[in-house]
Amino acid sequence: MKKPKYQIIIDFIKEKISKGEWAIGSQIPSQRHLARMFGVNRSTVIIALEELMADGLIEGKAGKGTVVTNNTWTLMGDHLSTNWNGNVTQGIHKASVSTVQEINETESDNRFIQLSKGELSPELFPLEEMQDIIQKVSKQLTPFGYEEPKGNIKLREAISNYLKERGIDVSPSSILVVSGALQALYLISIGLLKDKSTVFLEEPSYLYSLSVFQSAGMDLEGLPMDNKGVKVDSIYQTKETGRNILYTIPSFHNPTGILMEDRRREELMEYCIREQIPVIEDDVYRDLWMDNAPPEPLKAKDRHGNVLYIGSLSKTLSPGLRIGWLVGPEPVIDRLADLKMQLDYGSSTLSQLVAEKWLSSSLYEHHIEKVQKQLRIRRQRALEALEKYLGSVATWDVPKGSFFIWVKINPAFKVKKLFEKALSKGILINPGSIYKEKAGQFVRLSYGFASLDEIEKGIFQLSEIIKNNKG
Image 1: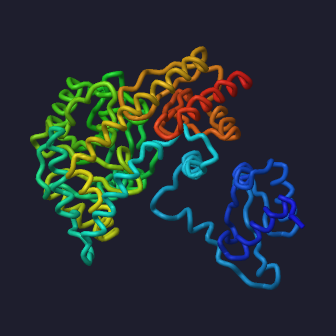
Image 2 (image 1 turned 120 degrees about the horizontal axis):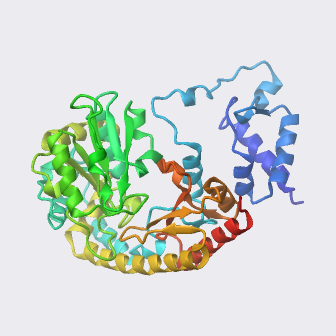
Image 3 (image 1 turned 120 degrees about the vertical axis):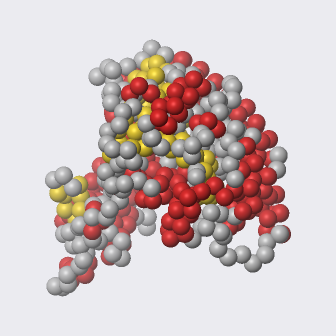
């Protein structure tokens, strides 16, 4: 006989508790999360939770949600259990805010229309080419161990040649292969900055959705932007020299999509060199231009070793490869290479060999041309849907690259409510609040991952939510 759905939920939670996976003091997932997990109404979840509460296994606590208060062993005798609940909040690295955690979990749920993901659709993944390269790499394999601290030399040579075509003349010895751009930021935060340093950054910014610098004891100082990029005259020395650094995404900024114009880049470099403010340039979206190639990177204008330059294959080819790079003065790269060895003893050899094949051949450039073509089609579909369904309640600028549209919703409707209602309808969006957008009226919509039909359907559903839930 088939179990009722509430009993399935009860059995699931009991198993988690009995195995110690949800220890005493742990907060269990929210009703909304459980309802989504099991594909049921919240009323079904409530029935299950009430029975577990009656059994003495869980309890609702003000400000903490529902927590595990006993397990089957403590109910059977006088056995004390370790309460890990206190420990998980004591680590030095801060947790993501709850909205970001919810987004991260939901992005792996294929049942949702993903208007949030900052990655390319599986439809744009070069499967045949990737299979061919992996097959070639496998045939050439010899026994392999740990790579050099800075990364595979052939890959670093390929990255060096790739960067020369984009205006950056750098030796392989000044390149560190990292497991994605985020690892580069983490290494910088723990290896180069003094405690209580200030990180200047555009506001809003993708960096606000992370806790990498705050966990290392840094302060984030937001800087205003206009349609040409960060406003240089808003930067100021908050502390003595050596305690300030600037993080910027000049090409197709995340989340706003703004492309910093060339003259603004020159002004920014002149100011930072004069004031001795080092720069972290996050350039992972550079190749995803659709109308015209962006101006040269800040690093191309750097003759003083002032810029740490971050690039990656995650946005353009495959996030699963986990291959990125950090460019800087050799002493900096040596320092961070040592730290990376202490963390993971180097990025995957197989991924590095595959990445080298992509970059050292014409395959990568041909792939980028195909991606750019498809992004133009996706952008057009998204813009048409926005105009058709949200034109009366929202405004936006046309992005020149990458896969984000920064949409301002009419103040009559709260974005927080839109995010929650969209989730309940199977649509995931990114509210501007996670990027520290102060007005609370922006959402970041991605047209990079969802199918064309899903893009239109998702935007239509957002318009229906706004229409039916004004106020």
